[in-house]
Length: 250
Image (tube, rainbow, N blue to C red; front, side, top):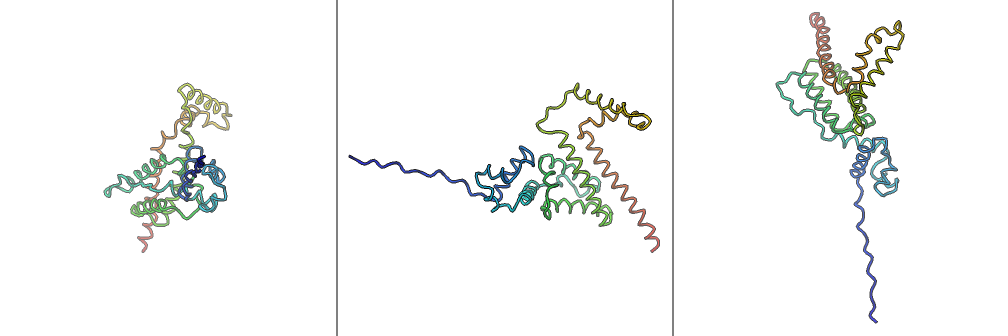
C-alpha cells in the first residue's frame, strides 16, 4: 500500500516587524478616531497583537509616545504659502496665522498633542518660532519683547482654536434654526432673571449676549486676527514712544 504523506503545515506569513513609526502611526489612528484619551500602551498592544512589554522596545513610556505622536502630526506644517517679500509685516503675520489655522484644522490632534508635549520641541515648532520672530524683529520690536509677544499670541491662538474644535465636533448633528433660537431664548431669559441692581449691564444686553454667545466661534475668527494685529501695531507704537526720550537724552 502506497504511503500517503500528510501535507506539510505551512506557517502563515508572520506579522511585519514592528517599528517605532508603526507604533506611532497606529496610535495616531486611534487618537484621530476616538480622541487622545483612548490612546494607551495597553490598547496599542492589543491592536498590534503584542504584549504591552513588547512596546517598550519602541517607546519608553506613554509620554515618549505622546512626544513622538506630536512630532509626527506637526511634521510638514508650513505657514508660509503665499507670503511675499513685498508684504508689510502685518500682512505677513495675518497670512501666516490664517495658514496656521488651516493646517491645524486638517490635524485634529495637533493642539491636544502640543499641549501634552514635553520634549525640547519638534523641528516644525522651531521653524514657526523663527518666522514669527523674524516678522516682529523686522517690524521694530525689541528682541525680548518680540519673544514675549509670540508667547502671548500662541496662547491666544491655541485657546481660540481649541474652542473652535470643541464647538464643532465632527460627529455632532448641527442644530436647526428652531433649536438654536430656543437655546438663545433660554440664554437671554437666564440673564433677564438676574437681579437688575447687581447685573444692570447684562440684563440690558441679554438679547445681544445670547446671540453672540451661541454663534459659531468661526464667525469671529477675522475679528480675533484683527485684535492680534491691531494690538501689536499699538504695542509697537508704544515701544517707539518709550524709546524716543532715551534716544533724545543720549
